[in-house]
Image 1 (cartoon, rainbow, N blue to C red):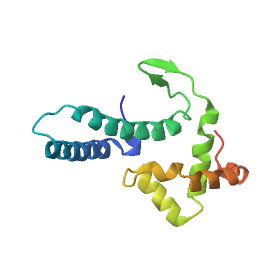
Image 2 (image 1 turned 90 degrees about the vertical axis):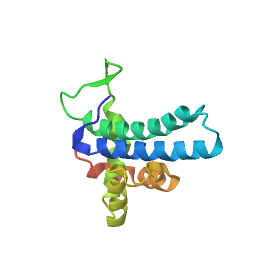
Image 3 (image 1 turned 60 degrees about the horizontal axis):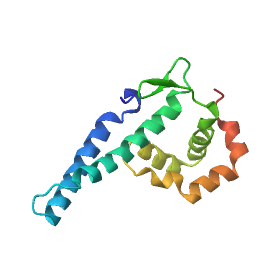
Length: 140
């Protein structure tokens, strides 16, 4: 897998992974006497969550571009165009308020944790305004 350089996530993800490795290694060595058992699993779980966020956030946008192929483990996959419906409306919802938009952009640029995007408050607001937000979405 490779990152699309358009989103500027690759070097930031690498830096965040290095920080996570430092933190995990430090905590692990504080709790053990040099035995590294369990360290790789904890680190890779954190790295996996970060990579999945980056992959999913860019993939949601990229697969809308004509001619872009979506592959998993080298096999071409079909993408349901409606899979972008929520993320399209989420972006429209974020654009309605300056502070919310800045927070959203900070999240997409990996400066802020993405957990808040799936909070009940945000998801409920998008669902409650589904039709209105859909009108703000540029057709594919």
